[in-house]
Length: 259
Image (cartoon, rainbow, N blue to C red):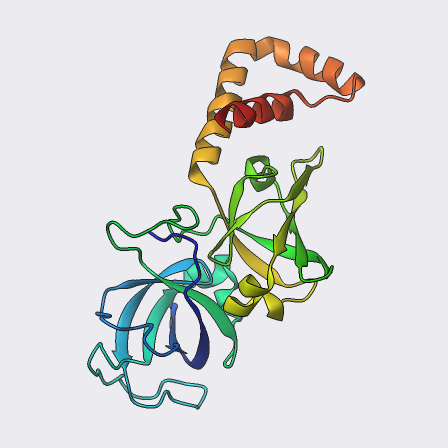
């Protein structure tokens, strides 16, 4: 489990490819890996990965991991390695990561830890695209384009995780086909502690939706389908003629009640 509060930024210092697998070696900020053990979970740009090795020697500067990683004490560890399977590489942006890139990182939450953001699993649902960047005074506004069906779970003032960071949706807009966009506003401290300042329009990011919202929306959709059944086509046609989306109206009513 993670909280969505990014604890630092790691740098990719080496990559090694094997059939169906890629090994990442990441250099971490001082103290980040204190107490780390092989098997520990770390969210890397929101993707839960497992530590396979760690060490305190200078991280390799070449583009491949050529020798088995030597272990050091957990207290002094400055880098760690992670094996990423082919499916994860294909479904996430990790398959496009290159040496030198910076990634948001968070250690798994410990029992009793303060949840400053919201509960995350580290299981990415989809990738979104940075559609627009605006920079009003002392703020940064990022607009993300989201494909169907995931946009149905995104609501203004709701939680969303972007590259492992728990953020509040400022504005959201859904289209008739189920796609849409949402915006987040970032303060200078968030930009300093994460990689969002590095992003450009067209970049892909990881999205993990908030699970409670997903359950609520799916429950409403199922209830509407079961109760209205054959009447739905007629009701939807009438609603469209009035400029109303019945499903969106029902979902927003439940979210408003939840709030």
